[in-house]
Amino acid sequence: MSGLGPRDIALEKLAATVTSEPLDVLVVGGGITGAGIALDAASRGATVGLVEGRDFASGTSSKSSKLVHGGLRYLEQREFGLMREACTERDLLRRLAPHLVEPIPFVLPVSQRSTRAKLGVGLWAYDALASFRNMKIHKHIDPSEAEELVPPLPKGKVRGGYLFYDCKNDDVRLVMENLVQARRYGATVVNHAAVRHLDGKEGDCRALIEDTPTATVFEVRARRVVVAAGVWADRVEGLARADARPRLRPSKGIHLVFDRTTLPLQDAAAFIPDADRERMLFVIPWLDAVIVGTTDETYEGDLDTPSVTDPDRDYVLSSLNSAFALELTATDIVGAYAGLRPLIASKQGATADLSRRHSVYDIAPGIIGITGGKLTTYRRMAADAVDRLSQDGGISSRSRTRWIRLGSHDPETLTRAVERRAARLGIGRDSVESLVRCYGDRSLAVIDVAEKSDNPLPLVEGHPPLAAEAAYCAQEEMVVDLDDLLARRTRMALVDRAAGIGTGRRASAYLADALAWSADEHDRQILAYRAEVEQERGRPLGETPPLERPTRTQTG
Image (cartoon, rainbow, N blue to C red):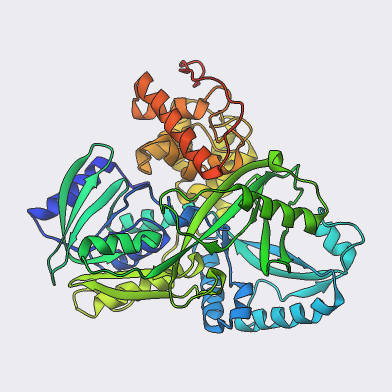
């Protein structure tokens, strides 16, 4: 059992609950919280199903700052308990998923003496809340060291700074590892399966589900339902009760992506104070690019289509250029993305001031909801939700997820094993490291696919992912369309200027072969995917070749 298994079989198993035994738990939502709940409940011995209306991690869980962190800026909000919890969970995730959660040094530059003491006190508090078990204790660094670690800093303008440590990750891959492990414990998970109605009843809940690719509707029975739908939680609650009131105040965050030659960061990230706007910007080397963000503003638009606007771009570019004395323009941006945070509407005021704590609440008989929180603390959120279910009996009261590995326990040994196999195909080091990071102990299964097809080519020219990943993700990760593959499984929509559909359209051709698309369907997929990317980026992709239908020679 390598991944998530065939999607059609998962649909059949869920539909069979109407005439056989109901599930113990049906999870609605396939982001990080829903995936964590599925794993937690399944590992306690419950029979679990999970449905996601779009693709796994297609909402907030693919739009993060790519950090697993304690939340240094929460000090100003006096969220000390949340910070301690986040630091504890961060260190646990480093142990559970060492191939995904990677320590990274952060430089906090200081340009005025008046701010040095304030920042120093804050970092001492940060270390203390982590019980002084951070990767390393923070330290003050002189101007030359700050400039060496963060080359874009203006020479001679900073008065040194501070060096501290947090972790970066691939948010989508963290979701996928939780889902894969949940399936190994017996859970049935499926994407592109939207809930159209919920009927709550103690011990016998029913959900009407639409398989959106085929428009087929079927029913699922479960003793309990957990709604973990993120920013869509209010919408899903409305399917179960007509008198549902809004609980959330969505907040929009955007990130811009740059090439490392344009924004030269390698090993260290930067945490840039923006005093004029009372915000902090992350500047993070990630994959083969650099991510800069994030904004935090109340969002009242369509939950399905948040977009990077011209004012968003101008704000981040202005702050970045000011901090680094650069002259970057919109033409330097490789990619951009917008996401919504599901913040609990506990008070009025700016969304930046709202707590990132989570809430577990009753929706209807047999149905509970969970929302709020942050990616770093997802495991604790999941445990809280399943603990609530265990109060009714039938599910163990003890969570096991703090001991369940997520993908690889020894990345170095695994990397050597993948290298030996990859060398026979002529696959380079960058691709090997990408495989281990993305798939953990399943990376050898991707090599199996590459060997069978005898195709060592990259999925997209100039990037590490392999062509074999298209077939593997179609077979084992329930990729249904081009957006699933390029926006989430391989992240080409973020780090490639042409979003993976540039010259040759190699990636789409590989997926077309794997899913047996007709030529017309292939064209439709490219047009739909391009529209999705352009809508989110808020700009056209620019010059890309006209639609073409690659031949077998082009697809390798």
